[in-house]
Length: 264
Image 1 (cartoon, rainbow, N blue to C red):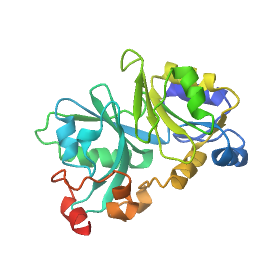
Image 2 (image 1 turned 60 degrees about the vertical axis):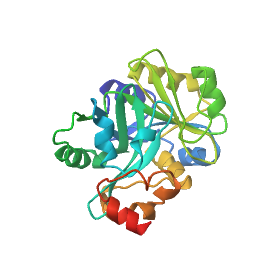
Image 3 (image 1 turned 120 degrees about the vertical axis):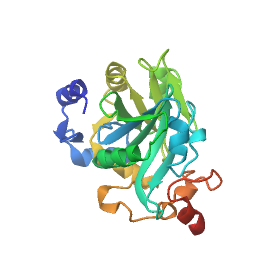
Image 4 (image 1 turned 135 degrees about the horizontal axis):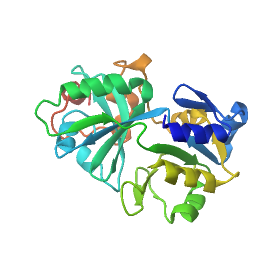
C-alpha cells in the first residue's frame, strides 16, 4: 500500500491488515452500509499491473479472453487470463490511463500472474510492471453516489463499464469507472493527493468501509473473482464472463482460446 495513503487512512480510523483495510472499527455497520447506505472504500486489496509501450495492446490481445481493442479511455472491461487448458489463472478489470493499460486483480495473485505474463513477452515491445502503489484506488457506492461525485468531479459515467477521465493529464487526473450493481457504484483511480481530496469531500454521509463490504457488493453484482484458492478451477464460462462482455469469441487466438471456443 502507498505509504502516505496508508498513514492518511490510519488517521481516519482504518484498521490495516497487511496491504488492506480490514475495517474502520465498525465491521457490522460497514456491512449494513453496503446493503442500504452510502459508502467509500479503499481499494488497496486490489493490485495493479501496468502494461506500457507500443505493443501493450497486441500482446494482451493474445493473452486475455476479452477484446483489448475495446478497452479505451471511455470504456473498461473485465476478462480472464487462462492456462493452455482454458482454465482461468486470474480475472481482471482492465482500464486505460493515458497510453497505458491497467489490469486490476487481487494482490495475492499479482506476483505470480505478472511473472507468468512476462515469460511470454518475447520480442513484444511492451513492459509489465507492478503499479499497485504508484496510484490510489477508492470505491464509492450508494443511492447518493452519482450525485455526490458529480458535485465533486463535474460528471460521472452513466452506463456499466463506461469511463470518465478528469483532469488535464494522467498524473493529475482521475479515472472514474461505472461498475455493475443495483445501486450506483464507482471505482476511482488517481494520484494520492487527488484521491485524498475526493475521500474527504465525500463527507460523513459516506461510511468508510474495509475490503469485505466491497467484496459483498461484487458478489451481489455477479462479478467473479479468481483467488489463489480457485486458480485453474474454472473455465471462463463457469465464471459467467460470456454474459459480462468478458469473452470475445471472434477476436482470434489467445492462450486457452481453443478450449474456451469448444465450450462455447
